[in-house]
Image (tube, rainbow, N blue to C red; front, side):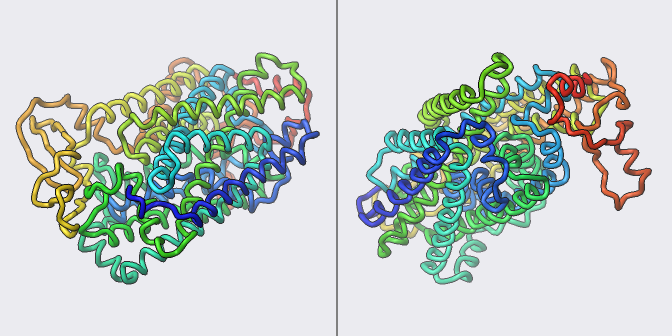
Length: 612
C-alpha cells in the first residue's frame, strides 16, 4: 500500500494508547489479586461479577476482529444477505437462557465438559475437551492472523511483528490477571469497537452522499440480496443457510463452549446470568449488522474502482483498513480509533480463549490425573498453561496464511465442525434420558467425523460459482493504467472451477467468466460437498443426534426412572403448559428435588451422578 494510505503519527499514538490501556488493566488485576490463590477468582472473577460487564465481555469474545474486518468484506462481495449473520446470533441467547444457564448453575461445574462425565463417561468428556481445545487454537490463530494482515496494510508494523506482539500481549495479561482482567478489558474494548465501527459507517455514508446514495448503489450493483428465501442448501448465502444454519452453530458456541459458559458462572445466580446473556445480545447483533452495513457503504464508496482488482490491496481482508485510512485521511486519529477497534476484537477473543483453554486442560486432563494437587499449585499451573496456549496460537497464526480462503469462511468452518456435534451430544444428554454411554460416544465420534469429512470435501473441491454467487466488482472508473485496464481479462486473480457436467469455469473477481470442457468431478462434489459451509454445524448436530439415539436403542436404553434428575432439563417445563404436557416431556425422569449436589462430599456426589 502506498505511503499516503498509511497511519499518521496521531493514529499511531491513539493505537499505542489503547494497547497500553489494555495491558494496564491486566497488570492492575495481577497486582491486586497477587495473594489470592483461589481458582474461583482466577477463572470466574469470584462468581459475583455484575451482569453488565459480563454480558459485554461475552459479546466481544464472541465477535472478535473477524466481525470488524471480515464481515464488511462479505457484504461487499455478497450483498445485504450478510445481515442475517448478525440477526442469527440472537437465537443462541434464547436457547441458553431457557435450558443451559439453569443447568450449569445447578451443577456448579468448572469445565462445561464435566457434565458429559456426570451424564455419560469420562472418556466422552475428554474427547469433547480435546476437540474443543484443538478447534479453539485454530480459530484464535486465524483471528490473530487476519488482524495482523490488516494492520500491516496501514501501519509500519509487519504481519510477523504484529502476530508476535498481539499474542504476547494477550498471553501475558490473561495469564497474570485471570478472568477479572479479561472481563474488564473486554468492557473497555466493547466501547472502542462500537465507536470505531459506527464512525466508519457514518463517515463512509457521508462521503458517498447519504443513505439514499448508498441504497441506490447497492440496488444498482445487485447487492440487495437480503430477502433471498431460496431453500436450496447448496446456495452459500440465503436466509435459510445463514439464519438457520448459523443460528444452530452460534448456539453450539454459546451453550457448549467453555469460553462463553465460563462467564455464566462469573455471575452469582441464574437471574444475573440471564441478564448478562440478554445484554450480550444487543452488542452481538449490533456489531454484526453494522459490519454488514459497512460493507454496503464501502461498495458504494468504491463503486466502479475496486481497490482489490486495481491492485491497491493484496487480499480482500485488507479492504476495511484501506477504506478507513482513505476516508479519514483528513481527520488525524480516527483511523487509529478504528484499527484500535479491530485490535480490541482480537485481544478480547484471544484473552478469553487462553483463559478458557487453561481451564479445560487443567480441569479435564491434569486434575483427574493429579487429583491431590493444591489450590496454589493449580493456579500456578493455570498461568503456565496460558503461556503454552499462547505459543500454540502464535504458531497457528503463522500457518493460516497458507490456507487460501477468506477469513470468515475459515472461521465458520472451524466453528461448525466442532460446534454442531458438541451441541448434539449435550442435546441428547439433557433432553433424551434413555441415551446411554455407547450411543453418546458413537454419536459424538460420528458427528465430528462426518462434519470434518464434508469440510475437507468443500476445501478440496471448489464450489460452483453459480452457487457461490459472488457479485461483480468493477474497475471501469479507475484511472487508466496497465494494472487497471478494464478492457482486458485479468488472469492474475483467476480461479478455476470444474463442474459436474465436464465444464470448467474460469472466473476473476471482476466477474468475467469463460467456460471450456474438462474432466468431471465426483458426484459428491456437487451434492454433499456443495452444501453451504454455514450448514456444517447443522450436519454435525443431526448426525450426532441420530447416531446417539439409534445406537442407544440397539445397545439397550437407560431406564429414565433410575437417573439423577439434576442432569436433565425437560424440553417443555413452563408452568403455563398443562401438567400432563410437562410430565410427558420429562420422559420418565423423576421430579427434581432441591438437592445441592455441590455441597455433598465427593464420594456422595460421584454416587449421585454416576447413573451410567
